[in-house]
Structures are given as structure tokens and as C-alpha cells.
Image (cartoon, rainbow, N blue to C red; front, side, top):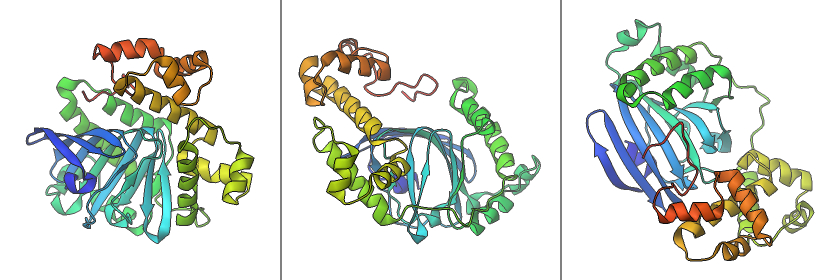
Length: 328
């Protein structure tokens, strides 16, 4: 099922009874997924993705709850009724797989790290085990099913507590510890209100696509710096509309997005090309190399020169290094 959900599996690194490690790759990037079978019918996935999208199968998956927690990055989910939901850092999203309109998952910022939990109601054989801990999975399923969209729980201390300990658990006891944390999460999910505000506003498909068109335009030549008023004229939208739509889809403003994109591109050039740091600075739109170096060090903790040296020595991951959670 995992392969059908994600698609583009290019390598299975480990495949045993309770653990599977998968590498994925497409034209937008690559990533790694670690799958743990915690109980019959319940799987936990670590997602470490440096790509913009995953394209899975269009096959329907009935009676499966998907729970997503975002550690960093941003996740877009297109649901039925042409509604879009976005899960940001620290957020939790809960829905039935059948409520997703498409199997394609979109990661607006080209980086995503988080946990997915898949609960297959039809495959759970021992509901009494969970009831002995006060967990009623069928009740949770019925609440999620009644809400035909996606329930988003925004970042809070309780979620941070549950998931931080999953991300940082000791490798030796990780499997059993994750089982305990799943029980804790299910207890939490059994107590929350799944209703969604009737006046909740969603971006339409047109608005989302228009925003993505603006993004594609500004990254088509990253040496150029567009003002909001210029984009408003080019796309026949108000400045406020562009700002609001872009923030809703990408979670950040246009200036910040373009800055992050330039730095990500600089990483790619440092890794894959023989360009000098001065040349890379010019290619990504920095006329001042010292400003580029300063922005790069602020983001990655290394100057471009130090970064390139480490890459050449094959000692540094080419994108964000997460000390709390590394899958290599």
C-alpha cells in the first residue's frame, strides 16, 4: 500500500517484518521514508522529503485513517469538494484517505519532514487490546468519517510533547516506544472535537493554481526581484489578494519564499557544479557575495565555502540537517 500511496519508489533499502526503508525520487527531488508496522493494521511512517510532490496511485483506500504531523515544511492536501488544507510546522491533520481528491501530495516549500500514521480499520484484529488502554478506535473512526473534510489541530504543547518524544526516542527501544506513543496519541484523538466551523474559508482550486502560477513566474528567473505591485499588474490581482493567497499556500511571504528558494538552489550548485562561490552568488540573484554568504550561514550554519568543503569531503548532508531526526 505504501508504494501505491507515494509512487516513484526507486529503491527498497530494508524490508523486514516490522520495518521498511524506501527511497523515492522524481523530477522535483528525492526523499526517504521509513515505515514501521506497530500493530496489525497500524503503520507509522517517518517522511524526510526534499521534493515538491509525490504522485501515488489513484486506487481508493476505504476505511483508512491518515494522520499527519509536520515537523517542518508544509503539506498541501486537496480534498473532495475542491477544498485545500495546509499542514504547517507542529500541526496535525486527520482525515480518511477516501476524502482526498487525488493521491498526489504537494509540498509547497520543497522540504518536508514529518510523521504519517495509517490506521486500517479492516485489518485491526484486536480492538480489545486498545480498549484495555481506554482507546476506542471505532469511535475515532466514526468521528473522522462524519467529518468529510480534514480536521486540523494547530501546533500546541500537547502535540509537541507527544511527537517530540517519537522523533527523539532511543534507537534501541524505538519500536516499543513508538507503540506507547501511538496509544497516547489515540487517547488524545478520542477526546477532541472533530467538528469544523461552518464559516471556515478555503482557497478554491482557481486561487491555488493562480498562486502557483505566480510562484512559477518568480522562480523562472531568480536573478530578478519583483515588487508586489508589479506582480499585481501582471496577474491582474490586488496586492492584498496576492499576499494573502501566497501566504495561505506557501505559509510565508513572497520575499521569504524567494530567498529560501535561492538558497536551496545555491546548495544544489555547490553540490553538483564546479562554479565558484562568486559565480553561484550571481546565478541565484545576489549581486553582493558577502550578503549571500551571510544569508547562507544564517540558514545552514556554515558559510558557502565551509559547506562546499564538507560536501567535497562527503561529510555533510546537502540540505537541512535535522539533529533531532535523521534517517541516514
